[in-house]
Length: 321
Ligand SMILES: [Zn+2]
Image (cartoon, rainbow, N blue to C red; front, side, top):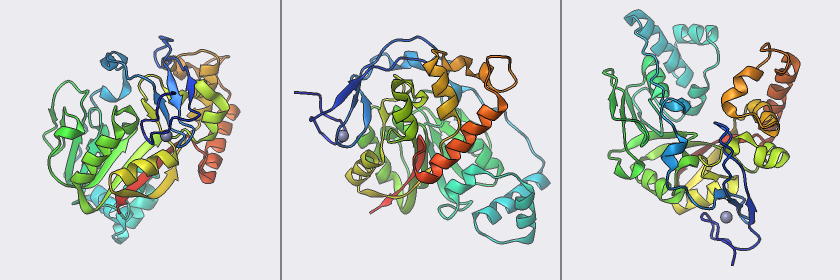
């Protein structure tokens, strides 16, 4: 009998694929199963030495962010802007917001959080996003990540604890996972644990690569977000809905947020170029680099795919049923 999908249990018609480690270009092959029922791609066997694939100083989210120290007046203005962006009107806030560039993280929080919300970032690396939110006025900020070296206390209210979700305490109004859920060995158990940590009207934001996308179909095992073996699961809308239901939750909204990288980096994987070298192919970096018009085309196609719900990554907003 074929291996069962670890999300929905299906054993019929599942297919095997063998993508390679290409972030660092080690080119080691890993077996993945594609579920014929829920569409979830999943690694056949979780490597015992997973930590090896997150080398210290090499994996992007573990580099300690630079600490900025801003004067009080600047913080006060920035907090007014954040309040306005979250929906609280003020003339100064409006003028500041109009003068600033679009802030994607506010889109995640608008209508779902206030400056006082208890915010948890799961798999936050060194906590760069939490530090940004602190500067913008959010007051209750905690991060957890099992792969950091040790706990970090930034001394400004932002703390990052070295731990996994099963050792988490407290209640939170807004829990977010930015490209960390796909790294979790047991997503169903982790989601159930997080659902219990969520306040009754809380929101759980899960940003993940999605396998039911144009780039996955177009590039197959060269799809850069496959990222074997770090991405243990590449979900679909269906597999996310199944996991949510299993945790007593429902998918209240989906927003696709893929970028032009689904083309630029996947094209480079087709050419066997490891991810760590992709910076050299940005426009202006020599004759083998993408041209500016190719690059702009990638961004335009990504925006179009996002509008159609076909981009290769998405924000899933979960709420209790
Ligand atoms: Zn399945």
